[in-house]
Amino acid sequence: MPNTCKKIFEVLLSHFGPQHWWPAETPFEVMVGAILTQNTNWSNVERAISNLRQARMLTPRAIDRASRAELASLIRPAGYYNIKAGRLKNLVRWLCAEFAGRPERMRNMDTAVLRERLLSVKGVGPETADSILLYATGKTVFVVDSYTYRVFTRHGLIPAESAYEDVQAYFESNLPDDAALFGEYHALIVKTAKEFCRKDPRCEGCPLLQFGAPALNGLLFS
DNA sequence: GACCAGGCACATC
DNA sequence: GATGTGCATGGT
Image 1 (spheres, chains in turn yellow, green, orange):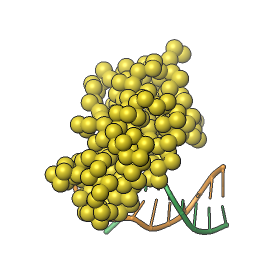
Image 2 (cartoon, rainbow, N blue to C red):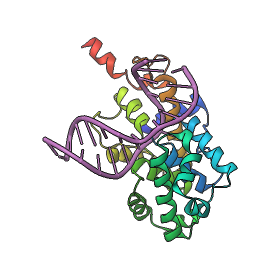
Image 3 (cartoon, chains in turn cyan, yellow, green):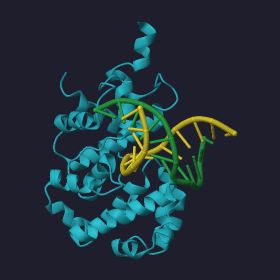
Image 4 (tube, rainbow, N blue to C red):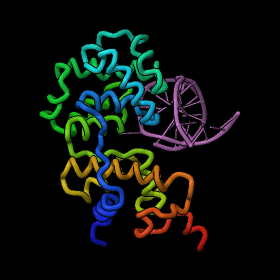
């Protein structure tokens, strides 16, 4: 089959249109959002970011200087606020130490090396690191999240037992080296999951049905 | 009043 | 190495 992976992207893009991700004004805001959105609805993250903006705390130096308690109270709507306050300070401290607090300087570093460095920050896991790499620094790294697993395993497009790096390799080896495409694709997967892959296990109306029946249908016919 | 949401670190076996 | 648990808010 000639590149199903790429074909799926084209189908999703024509079905949903551009998603305009990542919703942030600066690379640093992407980094903050990447921490805040961990296991959390984006609308709650928006409230937290709005609080930070109003308090003029959307800069590395401001967050570095703030107390954890002060930070926690501002990001409270995003949930896990004590944990995330610590994680934000960890990330900012690292950014200040390694890149003088300037996210754009991360671009100069080799992608694999930068990814390892990000993962060394306590509170930054694979998805958070890859979101920052892709949406804040423009590296062509595919972001895998729970939605990606759900959508692609449900339609039998990847094995259910795939590890994070397996799924990532599937996308990265089947797509052109194009960060804008990677960013749009991930956003479209999230959109697809929210729209069609939540409650209804048959995924009625999902544009991905043309690539294979949902896993559940296989059970019904077996 | 459950259940879910754009994870991660840590404990335990 | 696999599995379980705490972290917490706001919408459906």
